[in-house]
Image (cartoon, rainbow, N blue to C red; front, side, top):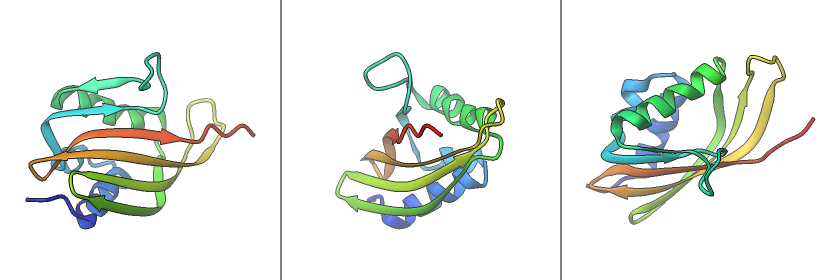
Length: 123
């Protein structure tokens, strides 16, 4: 089974629905998530299904109104890309609106690695 653009569209919908169970249904058991910021060259890395689940859930804690819009998805073999506009408001009340993308690696019809990038916009 191969990942398709429809899979990535469903994955994006699960993010916007803040539905962690639906979101994790797209992830491989050996998955990893590399965030857009953190102390490592890859940002912050969450490894393994349960750690990725915690990392994904943190996005909604940090930005309770998080939304990803204007999404476009591409798949080529075992790699994929999603482009989007992220909007959200953190605890400090300063709204964020930035372009970003996720670069994916797939395995066995699931997402093995979600590597996130986004613009660092200063207002």
